[in-house]
Amino acid sequence: MRCRHRRRRVGRWFDHLWSFFGSDVAAGDKWLIAPLISHAWRRYDVRFPDVERTLDAPYYSIESEHFHRAIRGGLPRGRVMTRRRVLGLSPRAVMLADGTRIEAKGVIDARGPGDMALLDLGWQKFMGRELALADPHDAPDPRVMDARVDQVDGYRFVYCLPFTATRMFVEDTYFSDSPKLEKKLLAKRIDDYAQSRGWQVESVAREETGALPIALGGDFEAYWRSTGGDVAKAGMRAGLFQPATGYSLPDAVRLAVKIAAERDLSGPALAEMTHGYARVIWAERGFYRLLNAMLFRAAEPEERWRVIQRFYRLNPALIRRFYAGQSNWLDKARILAGKPPVPIGRAFQAMRETKWR
Image (cartoon, rainbow, N blue to C red):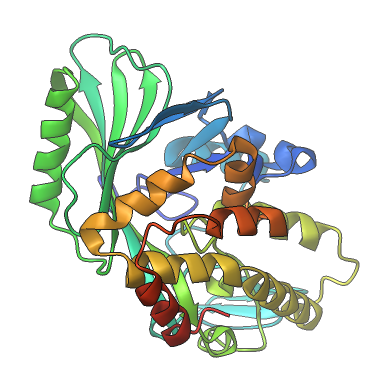
């Protein structure tokens, strides 16, 4: 992700946007994340060569500046430390590079991914730009996927979020075999897309890039141990991300609620609990990794869009459960039923050759 100003922010200093579907967070847990939300919509749409659809499902976004203010405002003054490098930690202490040692009853490590080489991954990579438009646009709802663009570097789609009548966030996104980004090329494609929609861009308010892991398989226990086995973990550090999207925010909410309900918050107890929880979640999500394996290994890169288009023909409730990582056995059967959008032989080969379980 690109940094504009190295300001002291909670969640590092990056300009970033986190988005999620309303069904990703349980109704009883939304109070926890509600103060962080910057934008909310009641529905969203998708566009494919053969499918155009609007889904009546809430969609939300969190901007990093608002996230920072909400977290800062909710904590006592002086209790937030930013831009401090951690040299080491244990279940009950953190050592900083300046020599400061912080003692605690329990420590949770949420510093980002472990050794990603231990996982079998594809990538959802992107460049996003917040565009200031000369005139109001005519697109009040998010367009979560617009795949009516040239299919290059895997499955490509454009993602649009209308922040205001003259502010549009446009992201050029790829389900690719590589996390490598060509920023100048993607910036040009965003400009071309805006022009194709009839939007006259006055300026670019901000820009971000990133690459989210799309898990096909891997060794969960080795991944957990790659960042130490005796300290509690959360987020990407714990392998807690939706395999099909790479999103980790909904999992962070679920884990936070679970931790808050624990009686023993000591370091060793937290480590045991978070490890056990993450291990179970990883095992439960084997189906999504199987689908990813078929998408990345069985479909030709320029034909991957057909798999996603077929998925978006399905029942909206099934789609909501899928993104929430809560597909039931009927959902799974329905997703796999019918004529497959990939060659059957290559699908079976992908299943055999990928450690998706």
